Length: 179
Image (cartoon, rainbow, N blue to C red; front, side):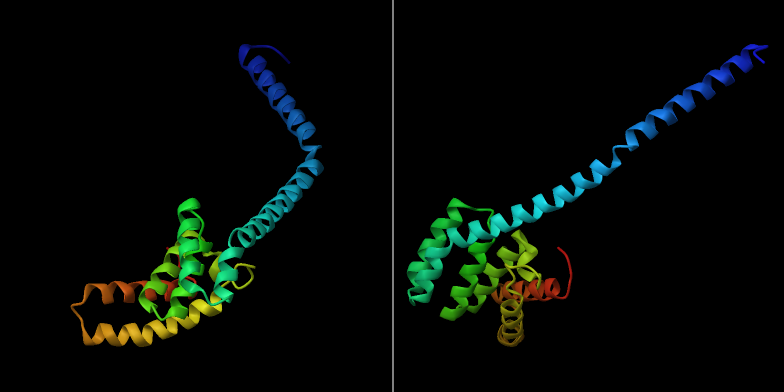
């Protein structure tokens, strides 16, 4: 059975493979815990997302109150303060876009929505509690009509062209496009 070196090496390798297989099977026995841990991570992610939504609501509540009271300039000032304090937070840009749209500043509203969507695409997801999909769709429709007409009348105007690019960016993101 163990006559020469080749047989000895073959049997040794076979023993190593069997031992490795036994170790893998022993490690895999705890697989039920791994599945539970995966479920736990999903729950943790959902809880973190819900906590984030709650935090956003709490942070931007003063802006919403000023907005409901009809004091849009003060709401914009408060938003500017919050945007400087939390520069990576998209919600401030989305609120800024809503306020600017209400004030009639369409180009600036579109630019603010673009910044917000670039920071967080959840505002386009219909299933998200942060969703502003309907408002963004209305803004895109209005922007294509008004800004598109201005762009056609003034083809050399760079600021109108930039606004039209922003409207088209939002349109492509609504259609499911990515950046």
